[in-house]
Image (cartoon, rainbow, N blue to C red; front, side, top):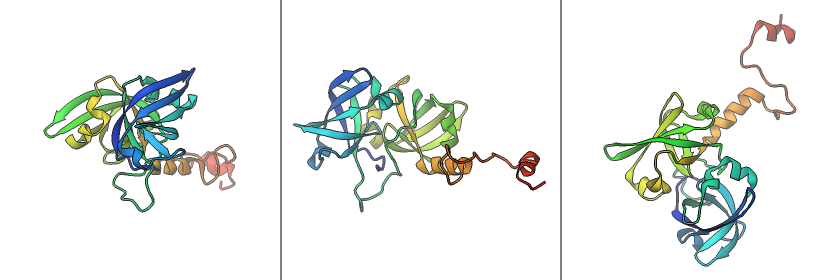
Length: 222
């Protein structure tokens, strides 16, 4: 589990490609002091596993599923990436619950200034994500814990302070760039329970969205 508080901006040193499978060689410094092989690292908000440790960096595998559904498929040698180690038990919980399981990607529609803040407009590729995007609720963008300002037709906005801009890859983003989106896990669980009950969707009958006369009749109440 992560908190969405980026520890440092690393860079891609090399990429090994075989179809949609990647091996990323990532240059880093701050996270290397206690990183071990097998540890989880969020790379642009994607939970990856450190497979080898090399001088001033580490490697991580990217499977085809991750390649297809995140912006890691846009990386090139020299690309900047947000890095965060998994949260320590007993550590400060400064962000929100972040799994490193990206729900989808979006495109940056606009970047505007609002006095000391910078407002990013994000247009998700999957409109279904909007059911989890609540004004003043949490969202993770490229591994950064942020607060949704507002949602409008087809997009949502986040307002970002100068410190966050300067310490993350947002400092290098521009309009039209792709960004990873992870919605609040609490909202996803609530949605799942409301629609599928306590069992698994594949083994339990899907609950109706509303109680109708037909539902009551089919279940012996009318």
